[in-house]
Image 1 (cartoon, rainbow over the protein chains, first blue to last red):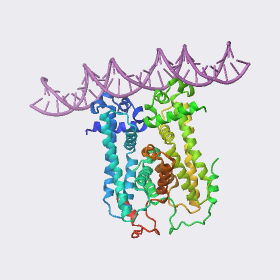
Image 2: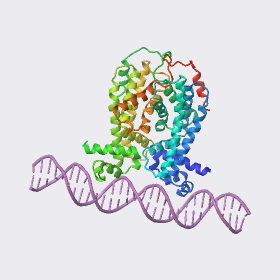
Image 3: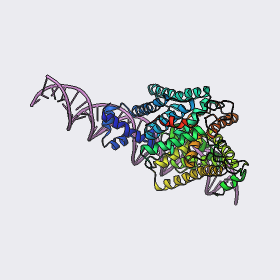
Image 4: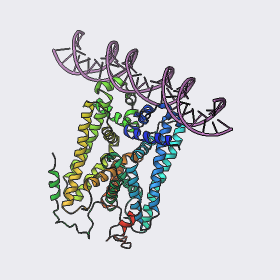
Length: 224
Length: 224
DNA sequence: CAACAAACCTACCGAGTAGTATGTTTCAGA
DNA sequence: TCTGAAACATACTACTCGGTAGGTTTGTTG
C-alpha cells in the first residue's frame, strides 16, 4: 500500500462520510486530494471499488482495536466491558472509516449491485458478522460465569450495546474534542452507561428520599 | 393532507430508506406509486422538499409515541423506561420514516444546502433536539429522586440510550417479524438491556464471586 | 543518456437526473 | 351543461457524473 493509495483512502472516507456514497463524486475526492480523477482511477478500478476498500480498512481497524481486549484477565463482563471500551475508542478515532462501514451495511441490505460487487459486499458483511460474534461469544461466556445478567436475549442485547456505541457516529463532533484523552473519557462514559445500566443499584450511596410520582411534574415543566 | 399526498410520503420514505436521498430519483418514487413525476411535483415543490416533509412526519410520529409515556405514574427511572419503550416501538413501527430522520441529521451536519433549505433543516433538527431533551429532563428528574444511577453524564448517557434503540434502524428486518406484538417484545428486550445494564446485580440468583472494584482497573488496562 | 514503466493529467463520451412547460383528464359547482 | 380549477401525464432542457482513451511527467535502472 503506497502512501498515495492510503491518502486516497483517507480522503475518500472523509467524502463518503460527509456526503454519502452516491452524493460523492470522484471529482470531489480528487479535489480534496488536490489532484484529478486520473490519480484515483490509476489506483482503484471504480468508485464502488474505492468505497469497498475504505469499508475493508474500517473493519480491519475494528478488529485490530478489539483484539487485545479479548485476552485480558477478569470475569466475563469485565472483559466484555473492555472490548466495548476499545470498540468505542476505535469508532470515535476512526469515525470517518466507520461511517463508511455503516453505509456499507445499509448498501448490503438493500443492495442494488452487480453480482461481482455483491460478492465483495457479502464478504465485508460476513466480516462484520464475525466482529459482532466476538461480542456475542464473550457475552455467552459472561453469562456462564454468572457475571452477566442472565435474563437477556444475547443477540439483541449485543446489538443494542454496539448500537449505543455506534450511534455516536451520528452525534460525535470530532472538532470539539479531538484528542485521544477526550475520546477515552467519552468511550468510558458510554460503556459505563451500557454495562451498568441507568437504574440505581441498591447498596450505593446515592439514596435520595423516595419522592415517588413527583419526578414527572418536575421534569415536564422544562418545556412547552 | 389528501390521501394522495400521504401515499407519496409513504413511498418516498421507503425509497429514501432503501437507497438514500441522493440515490433516490423522483422517477423511482413515482414508479413505486405507479405514477409519474407530474404527480409528485404537483404536491411537492422539489425533491428536497419531499424529503423534509418525510422528515417532519417522522418527528411527529416520535413525539406522538412518547407523549403518553411521560404522563405515567412511577419513579423517575420507571417513567424514563416507559418513554424509551414507547420510542423503541415507534422506531421499529415507523422505521422507514425514522431512517429518513437519521439521514436528515447527517445532512444537517455536513449540510451543503441553500440558505432556505438550511433554515427548514435547522427547524427539523431543533425539533429533534427538543425530543432528546424530553429524555434528558426525565433522566434529570430520575437522578433527583434517586432512582437513576447518579454517576453518569446525563447528556452522553441519554445519547447512548437513544443510540442503542435507534441503531435498530440498521439491523432491524421488518419482514421477519412485522406484527405489533413482535415489535413490543423487541423493544422490551432492548430497553431492559439499556436500563438494567448487563452486569449481574447482587441479590439475584446468579451469584458470582464479588469482584468489587477490580473490574474498572482491569478493564482500563486494556487500552493505552 | 536511453529505455521503460509507473503515476498522473486532460479531454471527452454516454447515461442518467432534477426540474419545467405544456398538454390531458377528472370533477365539483353554478 | 358549461366552466374552471385541481390532479395528474408527457416531452423536453440543462446539467452532472462515472468512466475511458490517450497524452505527459517522474523516477528508476542499465
